[in-house]
Amino acid sequence: MTTTTEPTKAVTPPPEPKTPLLERLRVPGGFALGAVLLLGIAPLALSDFRLALLAKYLCYAIVAVGVSLAWGRGGLLVLGQGVFFGLGGYAMAMHLKLADAADTGEKLPDFMQLYGTGDALPWWWEPFANPLFALAMTVLLPMAVAALLGFLVFRRRVKGAYFAILSQALAAALSIWLIGQQATTGGTNGLTDIQGFFGYSLDDPVNQRMVYFVIAAVLLALMALARQLFVSRYGELLIAVRDSEERVRFLGYNPANVKLVAYVVAAGMAGLAGALFVPAVGIISPALIGIVPSIGFVIGAAVGGRASLVGAVLGAIAVAWAQSTLSDAFPAGWTYFQGLLFVLAVGFLPGGLASLWTVARNRRTRQASSGGTA
Amino acid sequence: MSGDGGDGGEALTISDLRVTFDGFTAVDGVNLTVQPGDLRFLIGPNGAGKTTLVDAVTGLVKATGSVRFGDEELLGKPVQRIARMGIGRTFQTATVFEELTVLQNLDIAAGAGRGMWTMLRRRKGVPEPVTRALETTGLTALADRPAGALAHGQKQWLEIGMLLVQDVRLLLLDEPVAGMSHEEREATGELLQRVSEDHTVVVIEHDMDFMRSFARSVSVLHAGKVLSEGTVTEVQADPRVQEVYLGRATEPAPIPVGEEA
Image (cartoon, rainbow over the protein chains, first blue to last red):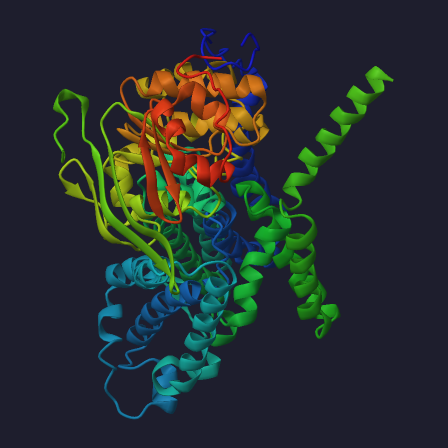
């Protein structure tokens, strides 16, 4: 009864956590460093061609921010982010195609004149002529689809591999449907040859740089948003749901709603990434949103460290860079390499490369302490 | 005796509760009333239906009959609704959120009614119920420790603390001292006695010494039915209980009763 573990009398107040200055400056400092790198150094150091590539990688990084939230913190293996990326991308591309057509005095986008069945615009294309509607849809449409899907799936307590497979199936279904609707979606080709971006010609390198700045700014803003979610009470609850859903239910929460929020936010981010991808690369097509790219969206986060925001973002950029470099050299081998990377990261380094530092530090501390006693 | 226990809170009234799994009847017509402020132990041999009973009360398994907390029927309500009515439980294996700190665990437990705006912001300071629970459970000094790094007994205390911050009025604890050292058992028993001053506590337990030291009343379950009920002395004197626990024709061992060992 006199042990220190006794829960009766513990009057010691919790020790005030003394955070060193360096520790307190870590997050804002890192954010500022990222901003300087992305908005200052990269545009100065890189050629137009390289900067355009980086713009594309940053779009994947935006998807990874959402993946980090939904998968890293929420435990939802979102293997179908291509769906939301695609919805956002197509919403944006439809508007840009209509704007291009209007510029040249045409009634229909070019591919519809080739493959179309009539000379009338399909009714569901009409509202996308409005730029505000199209912009809103790039985010709201993926979020709405995710909300509906998540509502049905999480309430039925579908999780783990079943959830992942379901997401994959949806990505496959959307890309197959798009291929089948050549007259209204461009089919396998997708929506290509996009000329302008809200009145600016995308052929002009200056405007391409502007697109890069928009993408980099959006990435930084979404990282700040995700960071706020991570440190909020919601972020703590999300980890609790990931680690013990049943326990959370006994605390009076509905875990389905907690997961739904992360899933919907991640979908919105993927949609925005898809929308920005279109002016950066000039195309959106079924091949960019199907099963393989959907897996690709999570590999970067897995390799970099899915629970760490910076890890996921850097991982996504690195994997995208490796893909465009290596897939030129080994076109057939890349897909296998990508799969192997995924298995290795998830199986042997669940914290990703971001956790290497912690692992190394723990080992050092262990060695130091054992060395001290020896 | 249904419901209004004056200022002490609500009674738990179980009538004719039945739980069947694929033709096997785990709980077979249990009638049980726990008055507010009681520290009731549910004992019984393995398979007597103790945990299933708690599962039925908390909405985890389907059951027939009636379980009322105060005037409200619990059967048929989903788990989280029952939890929000002020009924909390622990499990045989302590389930705390290992990657979160003690403070974060308690804060989540305290927050089921929080609005969206509060949820989306960072926690500032320590909510008052959390401070109190830290003190009651003696975990104040460990508030910033990850729950996964706690000792076994401390995890159980954290779980009890998580029920306290939820503002539960009825605590259902499934073998809270299993696997604990002697000191930890003593400390847990004292914690339960303190908690039961303003809560109703139901404890499922195998440990007879622990039961004798701390129970205020006891119900003995056997084969899905209530075999005996009363104070520790009454129950121990009941020949049917002796039969179930000790076999026929065995002298009941002399046992110190009602004292803290």
